[in-house]
Image 1 (cartoon, rainbow, N blue to C red):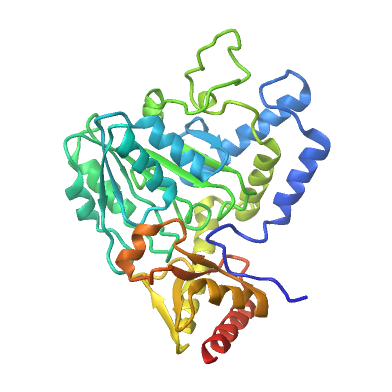
Image 2 (cartoon, one colour):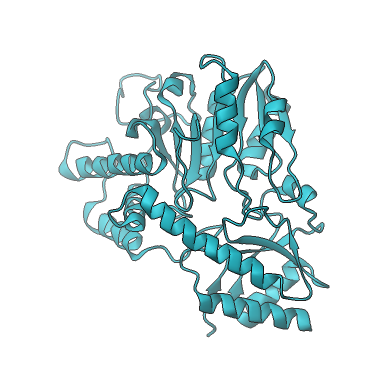
Length: 394
């Protein structure tokens, strides 16, 4: 059996830390209980896990309080909560062509059927949005500006710190649009500080750089905005059960139903394992440096292969995500050969982000995307390059 060579870390990180797996197993075997549904010890302990995870996430992103974190069943769920929960008919939204469908599809629904006006700012050939272009798109009724931190198609890191600073300088606090970012590709890998970047809201999954299992995510929302957020899901919260109205307090009002405590216990353990008792800034500087080295090496070696066209190379190499075209082969066919003949797993297509491809010059069927992670080794990279060389030599 061929060794599994995984190059799809932009989709989910593989393998997860042993600490993540062991924490989930331990919780399900010895401590599983519903949060907020009982006064017995196991239920109280489950609530402690949730509280500790909120605090850990807040620590990683520089949030003022763990009470600004609501836990969700994935990054998409978190992004939908922010967009549908904050926007109203008559609002205007500014976003970019680099966004994932987790943002673009909710915004399309809001603009098509719910009276929200939408402006999509284009990106350049590197997949980057210009901060001034974003600011030029802001209007008097702009309620929200949402720009992702890093593109999943090619890893281009967007200037969210510059955009956040410009928004803060241009508006009084009471009139400033909400600044929101999708940190799916960056949380746990790159520094993301909501205060330094002047972010009012941030959403991300837990299963990529956060080293948690699939089906986990969070939404950070600045406390001053809590009263403006409307829930998407209604049901039991374990509190105020005598009332038919949903509770109004954040974050519990946005966590109806039973929480996936085993998954959240694993995510908590994975985050702690990432930093190994260091503060997040120290842990992230190490992880970011490792990933940048992978990025530089990946692009350097891809550029040596005749028959490989690199699409949308970022102006600055930060994340090891590359989109390529294999000469003479559709992306799906190239990926199938890599999988069947070499055991190499890559992603193909439009990567749930159709608009960016128009700017970076992708073929109609999309790209073959190669993405490394912190567990990618030099040997893995050697085997990938050798396989691509053999593939293009045919």
